[in-house]
Structure formats: C-alpha cells, structure tokens
Image (cartoon, rainbow, N blue to C red):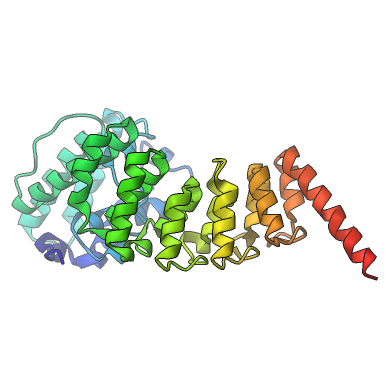
Length: 348
C-alpha cells in the first residue's frame, strides 16, 4: 500500500482536490480566452477530470480517480491549441484559486510552482522538477508514465516492457496501461497483459476511467485476453462506465475481424445478448447497427439478439442503421426481421 501523501492531506484530501478543481473551473468558465476550449454547456467533465488527476497524481483513493480519461499529461492536452495567452490565463486563474483557498503558505507556494512548471511541460517545453520534495518525486513518476504512453503509441515495445512494471503497485494506472497495450494489437504487449492478469487475477475487475480490462479487451477485439479474463472468473455482464457491458463495447468499438468471435466467447460465458444500458438504453445490436459492424450484428442475432428491440427513444436497430446510412447492417436486419415475422406466422 502506498504511503498517504502529506500534500494531499494539506489540500484537504480527495474532497479538497474536488473543491480546488471546482473553484478553478468556476473562474475558467468566465474567461473569454479559456471558455472556448470547452464547447459544452457546462464544465462538469473538465472539473471532474482535473480533480481526478489531482487525486491520482497525489496517490489518493483510486476509486475516486475514475473520471481520469488520460494517463499522459501531454497526450491529454494535445487536442487543445494552447498558446502563450491561454497558458497565461490558465496560470492567472490557478494562482487566484490558490490564493483564495484555505492553505498554508508552504503548500500554496509549492503548488503554484508545480502548476507553473507543469503547464509549461504540457505545451512541449522542458522544465525543471519542482523544488518541493514530494512534488518532485511524484512529478518524476508522472514523466515516466508519459514516457510509457509515448512508447506504446510509437511502437517502442522494449521501452514499454521495461517501464510498465513500475506501475504494478497502482492498479488503476496499471489497468490503463494494460488497456493501451491491448489496443495496440501487438503480440509482445498482449503477452505482457496476459502474464500480468495471470499473475494478479484481481486486475480483471480493477478499473481505469470506470472501465474494466474485460471491456477494453472486448472493444479491441482481443480474443486472447477476453478468453483469459473469462477463465479467471470475470463476470461477462460486468458493467463499466455508463452501465455498459463488454458485449456493448464489442459492438460499439470493435472494427476487428475477431469481433464476432469475441461476441461468441462472451455469450458462451453467460453474457446477456439483450442487456441494455446507458442513457439511451441501447442493446449491443443497436450499437452494431449504428457502427455498421455487419458480422458482429450477425453474431449477435445468431446468439438470440432481439431484432426489434427498442431503445429509450423507441428506435429499433434497423432504424439506427438506416439513420446512420449503414446499408450492410440494414439489409441483414431486414432479412432477419422478415424471417422472424414469417416464423411467427407459421406457428399460428
């Protein structure tokens, strides 16, 4: 078990991280330079993710880091065109937030320096480590984590395999790394994932971004990892973020030719082919129709998926396919729907 962070305690624990994030984004929401970076109606997602980063970075409760979508700081900011004006505005609001917070001066000054140097790093500048001893150690660990993600993305598998074990003591972070390895599709990294899961079966139900390794493997069409996790006893209907099951992830995410085999493996293990979840109450077949995954849709239908299932709006999978111009799936669903109707007539 990792030692509790003195800095996290000085901030007021996990709740203090959330308060700091909420206060900061309350200021960002009124800034003409920064507000356009967040086109939604609210800044709730940004607030939750920044709080989750602080909790994760400071070694807090992993269950309270699940809004963290990114492991790499640079990767998480790469989608934003951050220039000097935006960075200055960000720092101005962060400094004002820290000044208004109930913190000791030493904590406030340490965080002010950390955010200044960290904000330079995310826009590609090299920067010195923080002076604060704990922050310097944690910053060094974050830089290694950024390096592992970059190595996975760039295909530097030797570096990935050398650095990734350093994070085995942080299960949520480690599952995030394993997920990226599975998504790479590269054999050496997938074998590492298999070895890790066999050595520690609890990884099968640990979560990164609210999502289990079985969901990630299913979405990537990685039959080897899916089969292993099912053998290790992971529940095939386990729900992840948004109350979605691994079968939903196959239908929604998987563009691999192995997708139908993953569907069959999950169904053999007991996955409910007609489970619906999330805000729209869509089934896996709805999602396969929306994405145009013909063979996955066929595998779901063969396993007993209801061709006329309706989501919260009342749409069937066929209506989803037509709306999204997925002609191949539309034709399949029309054929299966007609066959189902003919079968019911024949029994009358």
